[in-house]
Image 1: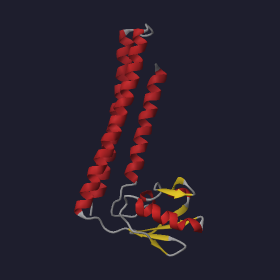
Image 2 (image 1 turned 90 degrees about the vertical axis):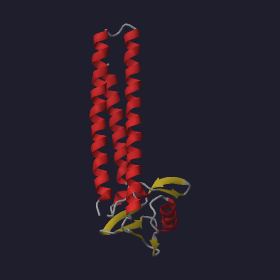
Image 3 (image 1 turned 180 degrees about the vertical axis):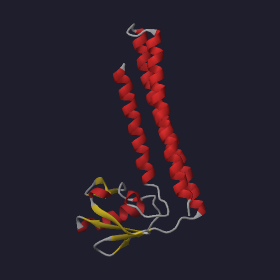
Image 4 (image 1 turned 45 degrees about the vertical axis):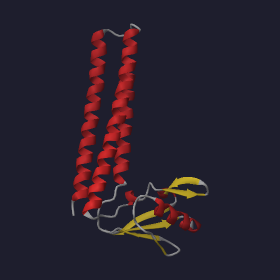
Length: 184
């Protein structure tokens, strides 16, 4: 049963990490590499993350520079950035791509906060599904006679405690991202 609890905790932690990656890619008023590094680029028929194809730097607070390792991929990178939901038009000079980060409008900030809430809720749902699976496993073990009723209750309580801890981190991350998005 300890393995079931550890596996549930590990899967919930992975869901939390996924949430953090999603939130890192949400645009705020400042430039940072996390905005573009996970954009998928069609590179020789394979969807490849931008960070594997180029060096990404932030020379100014409102600018991102993408320098491809392979100069022939610059067109594909430009197309990938245009097709992403970032809403920024790349400037291609043949060797590198510059992304000028415009300030966010109040309406766009509210849209991003709404999206952050959606992503956080998806993460919570995923974590609750993990709890449900672990609880089913515990119930099955109880039916098979491997656990007493007290052990079943204790293990379900441990899984609930893990869920509460991870959901609290989701709430904290959402609060932090909301504040970051709404600051001018």
